[in-house]
Amino acid sequence: MNFAGKNILVVGGSSGIGLSLVKLLHGQHANSYVVCRSASAEWPEGVNYLKGDVAADIGAVEMFLPEQLHGLVYSVGSITLKPFNRLTDEDFLRDFQLNALGAARMIQQAIKPLKNAAGSSIVLISTVAARTGMPYHASIAAAKGAVEGLALTLAAELAFQQIRVNVVAPSLTDTPLAQGLLSTPEKREASARRHPLGKIGQPEDISQLIAFLLSDDSSWMTGQVIGVDGGLGKLKTS
Ligand SMILES: NC(=O)c1ccc[n+]([C@@H]2O[C@H](COP(=O)([O-])OP(=O)(O)OC[C@H]3O[C@@H](n4cnc5c(N)ncnc54)[C@H](OP(=O)(O)O)[C@@H]3O)[C@@H](O)[C@H]2O)c1
Image (cartoon, rainbow, N blue to C red; front, side):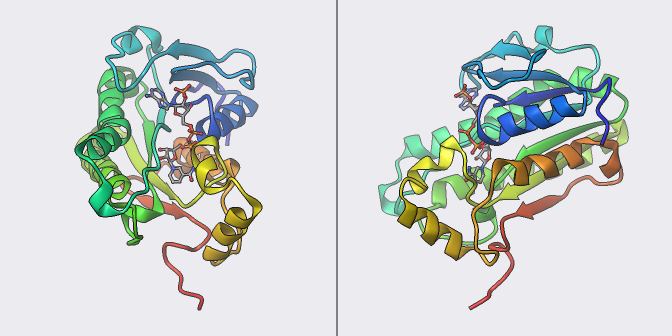
């Protein structure tokens, strides 16, 4: 994969999967544009940064972006796990806003430079729980189901403009977002055991697939939802 001369926007590039992607893209000579609420000390030199909260109005995004944008990744999200009868309207609305509405608004603001690139790629992030029923995931699974629907619609709507749209759907991945689920050795071991491959994900497991979907190596792929989940979404091993 060679990203020399390519401009890539990573929304949520200061932590976890997004940060891993920014580092990987830097190693492949991409120009990274990052939007999130706080800068990261781990960023390589040369990252273009716009401070912004996707839950608020980030009107400056259009001014921030270059004339041509070759890729957009939306790596903002949440993990809200509660029994169904304890979920509030606020839980559902917040998950929808952060995961689905935020992605839609970012794409709207970036659509002109994405079109200008004459062959660009959008990657959104879902979860294994959107297609595999799991207790306590009602709010986040509903929001990520919306992300998948958004992606498929846009893949169809934007295909004639050579803009591809794909989704990666991870299972539990070792990032700051998941720390509540991985805070003790016992929790880590139990989570690893739930996966057919016997381990939880690392940010690089996800960012490498995202980089492939951004690159010209995947230039005939669009409208796909790809699991990166240690087998949890498809396999029954006991
Ligand atoms: N980790 C998992 O187990 C897992 C599993 C399935 C799916 N996912 C999905 O993978 C994606 C990345 O998650 P992650 O685990 O890498 O999370 P993470 O480590 O918490 O990173 C989230 C990123 O989003 C930014 N962000 C959060 N709220 C924001 C806001 N309101 N406005 C702007 N930026 C915001 C954060 O930066 P600031 O705080 O500086 O704004 C950070 O850069 C999410 O869509 C998540 O739902 C994760």
